[in-house]
Length: 207
Image 1 (cartoon, one colour):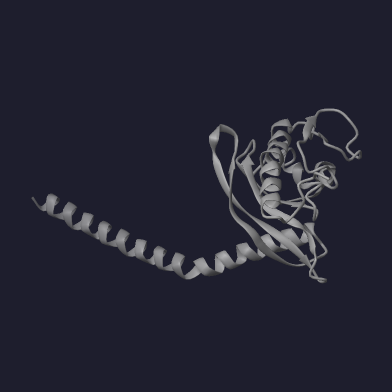
Image 2: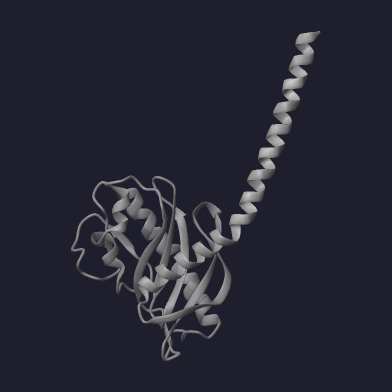
């Protein structure tokens, strides 16, 4: 009987301790959440500014755009307008997400003011394999998107990476990650362009 009593006493101590620690974690999370969100917004803004260097500020012009990715997965993103010091549009940027070899890939993608060309991408989240998939952070792969047409891109294993067109040369040994990045661009570009046209922020491409 004494063993049962001891077990009950210890169980209650464990339950109470877990409850107290849970409250402490929740309180800490609540206290830090505003700062975490602020830091995330600043990170996104800095990554956008790194792409569209003429921008003095960014403002959301199309919120909550729904993007249907592969396997029916739905992402939501905001489209930001980059505003120059002259108050003119310097381009647009948006967060684009997909799945790579090692996990989720979140990119900040930029396009010019007419959404005719990509200005490139910066990486918000990447857990790809060091030395292979994480080479998407480097110039060999990333520079191929700078000035590429804002339309469907194709991945190729051979070619000239310095030739800027709709053909993107894959990273050797990281075809899955290379494919993932190109798929992210292709998944988002048409929908983003459509939304910008609908809002009258760019022309419809017809003369």
